[in-house]
Length: 101
Image (cartoon, rainbow, N blue to C red; front, side, top):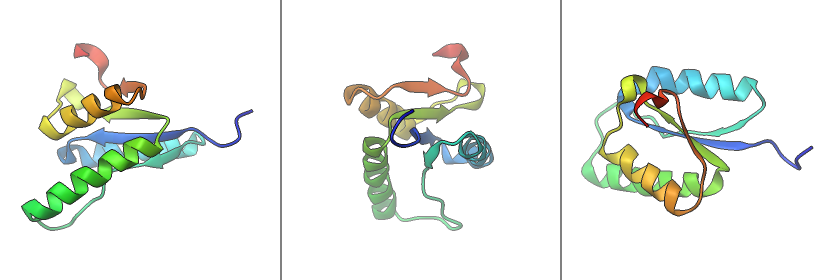
């Protein structure tokens, strides 16, 4: 038995917030520690987006693997950067919709 539960970082477009919440819930009930993107109820500034993007890379650093939430196979620019970062750091990557991966 591992010393601690697996840590999974959820990545994906904020347009899929409901799907990311569902993945978070499912993983949590499966005994996984989930690290997820921050959420904002209002528009954020460009400076805030840059800071949140950098923070999310640190979340990937903490994770054992990443789960990309990509309904319909959609992967945007920020998520592509996160996937490339995870790949470069040797993190395993899985997708909720692996049909085009």
